[in-house]
Image (cartoon, rainbow, N blue to C red; front, top):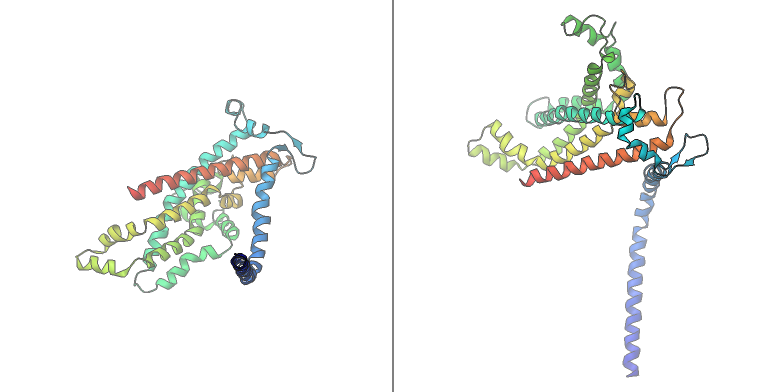
Length: 329
């Protein structure tokens, strides 16, 4: 009995030692991987996690970046959601925030409706057997490579009301009157920003569509051709349905990007004229970095940033639910 018990203990010790050796062996093999991941992890913590923690902390304070932070609890959120006061008082600054969401949603809807079909058509074109497709693929993607701020500045120069080349052509065509400033007009500036952003970013979505189109099995098209399907029928009954899952992801990424956009208007109009192009995240930026002599509002800016992030998350979740339902329907 003693011998049997001793053997059982030896087996248990050997099994435990074997597991420890296996665990240490796996850890030893993983050390190079962890070393390579360390810089990325540090950047993620510094540039991603820390700003979130900072915003969650200071959204409960009244803080301008220079004086001592004053704890106010949920007062920043109360002011932000006090709709009765916001829309009854003339010139209430929080009214601009909520109206900016209307402009942001309009911007996102119009830009997505223009950009996604354009990117798909360009991707469909460059994946055909037509000559010159490589040149056009490079041409379409080129704006994505160039510095966006420089492109927006060029757009502003071309739309100069006195010597801008686009202004001159539009004047000669009778679209606008002489010396008309498109960027000083609310609708003109809003549409210009959408077109400028679309021209820059549609090339990236085109690459995503190209990746999806090249993964469609060729035998599906061959079978359809044997059955007598023409090019238009193959496009609408094979290509588009088989690209639905990829399109869902591309539209979601484009939508999130649009909800956080501000670049074109920040460079060309500074949110003007009269806040007509001030999108939501530009409004938040101006709270942290006011252009005038007004004091920065870090506490309120952090609170609004948190609320805006939640709104973006809710919109994204609604889109995912609706798009998933449409997939199965």
